[in-house]
Amino acid sequence: MKLTYTLKTALSSLKAHKMRCFLTILGIVIGVLSIILVMSIGQSAKELILNQIEGIGAKTIAVEPGREPKGPSDFLEMFSDSLKEKDIALLKNPNNVRGLAEIAPVVYQSVVVSYQSETKRASIIGSSALMAKILDIYPETGDFFTEEEIRQDAAVVLLGYEIKQELFGPSDAIGEQVKIKNKTFRVIGIFPKKGMISMFDVDNLVLVPYTTAQKYILGINYFNEFILEAETESIVPTTVKDIETTLRESHNISDLEKDDFHITTQADAIERANTITSILTALLTSVAAISLLVGGIGIMNIMLVSVLERTREVGLRKALGATDNNILSQFLLESIILTGLGGTIGIILGIFFAFIASLILKTIVPLGWIFTISFKAIFLGLFVSAFVGVVFGLYPAKKASQKSPTEALRYE
Image 1 (tube, rainbow, N blue to C red):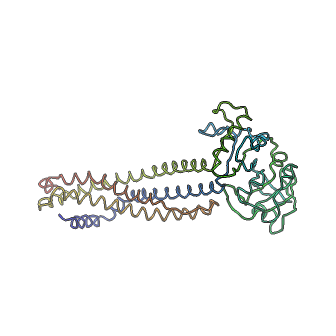
Image 2: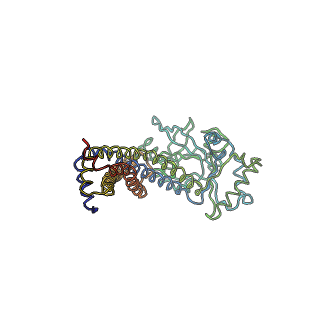
């Protein structure tokens, strides 16, 4: 029996039961749609995170208190007060750390900023001019605070665009006084509208000298983070080793397992982000693939019912000369057509819903969400659909091909 005839016979059989075919492929459609959607969102999230990390520059090194978290219990270590003023002086010494260009101590907290009767909750960061350099944010109006103002614990502040608009409206805020925790600060600069940069919402950012933040706002004598910049990208590994050695000597640490700090470079951050997003995407894809398994079982059940209903047809065709392989080919082809059609519809709907999801996420996540379609997901959807058609269609097709013509013709 020619393949074209087998294909025509299979299609005519499927057309005779349109509603049954639709319900049969529904599981495949949902499964492939879910895989496309999950992998698309996962890929977009991965690119977004990597773009944000890359935005801080390849020469940037971050030192945070506490051991590097490797499990849930280690996250408590991140609230350590191990980074102190003495560490800054030691790290700035070129005899201790080679290739270090700049260092910016960082402290941060969520605070309420007020001006007359207007108030606004914002993220306050106490740091130095290096923070502006790394984030590439400079005042649109006004000036940045100087090193002298840092040494003098000056009560000066720079405001993000949204905070300035909510507190002052269209009027010029330079020289005005705002209050943070009952302390009066003079506004010396306003940042332009920037949105999110390297996970910082610049538009809702309040920036003050780190000495001022420690003394008047947080009341602490330690730092939440050190941000350092190496002279060149190539010297970063050497600089990191020197930082580790210097901090261990400063903190009297001889056992490396008892480090009370951890260091992250851009390469480390990218590797971690890649690992985390890949694991999450794989996990969610596996969950979505379960519906493909359910769809495959549904196809096998429907095909078994179809074999039973068409017993006399199988017997008649065998009596007219059809071989076991002819019958096997027809029923297997019907199964593959169903799963292939379901996979194609699932891919089209998956791309559509992924696009809709990206539009929604663009409004929810102010980070420049990018619509991405994973061609790996499309290939996976098509491959799995065909695989399901063969695997779950083989048993019913085999069962149909093995029917005896005589018994099949006597079947009522």
